Image (cartoon, rainbow, N blue to C red; front, top):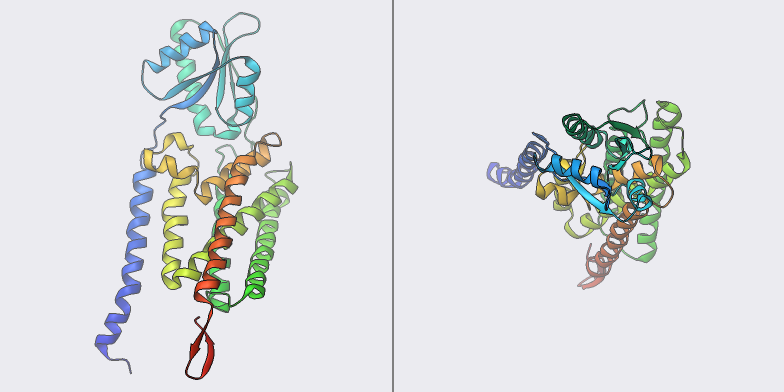
Length: 337
């Protein structure tokens, strides 16, 4: 029987880690999402388009909710809209009567709703006719745009659970290169199957999306694989403590940092920066790009996930070399892990 004092000392560490995760989870979500407010939501305007510039200046005079981003011509502004660099384009109507606000609600329904609201009020006050056109509409079966976030979140959670589970089954540190390759291959297979399941659910299962499901499957596999590799790499170096770190990075900071249904411009400064590199945020951006936007727009989030993958593989192999190396013992050679 374990002595009472020893049992208490053994249990303190896990309970402390659980306390850190729980308090961190509450703090992160409450601070990031308790009162999301738009701040510098980008709207494109063509330089020299005085009516559009004047209207956005009037909106800016009422607060920092919207930010005008100037482009040299209408084609450049449209490309920025398709790349999700901006959420809308305000321009003088081609007929010369009033203004046209072209939005891309698929990039963020919350953002385009805010833009439309502020610009509509400003146009009414100025007595300027305004037409609103949604050039890249969000799917009517997902009017609030929550599916990209929840799909990405499921792929991330499923991915890192796969990495943790394999580490528990095989040991946290692969002993040699063939075993490391086998582990990476197993995680890749897990990611492929997980992405297939997610694609089938949001596609024919729930009947939400029908377009570019092959691209969605590839994007999902990359995201799940990245999360699984990251979990394996962290656990290889930190073992059980690594599980806590994974949850802190991916869940406690990553989930509110991704914004959920809110774009990054609705988050406090610290969390707004996290969105650009956290796995749920990158995953949401990647899913939206693949499903709604032209080919090539997914390159930036996919490239960042590739950096995560490469870094995780390097860390995993580094742990193999440092912690999994053979060491001399009185009874002969044995593994350090």
